[in-house]
Amino acid sequence: MDLAQPRWRGTDDPRPAAGERRRHRRASQPVRGPRSRGSQLYLLQLLVVLVGLVLVVAGPWRAGILAIGVAFVVGALARSVVPIDHTGMLRVRGKAFDIFWMTTLGAALIVLAWVIPGQPG
Image (cartoon, rainbow, N blue to C red):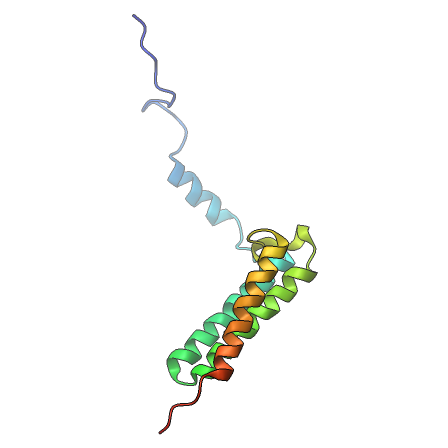
């Protein structure tokens, strides 16, 4: 009775292990930044959100929340303007959905920073 043979090669495989191949490949190639305009805008949006979070933790929370809200509104504007083949990481779902949720979230955060009364003291 013939048994099915495994699809992988045995220990006599002369090729290097996958980890060695990856390390060798990474060492020879230079590190590149994002290639598409949308990916660059997305990383800029993440940077502004990070700055906003630092502001929230450091004390002036209104400025931080406002920065995060503005980042999302600008991201929605960028998603509506950047062509589909250059959106990169800025594209999550469909264009209408992305614009809707980023605009809604950004506007809600801006209103939140504006409406909440200041703390006395």
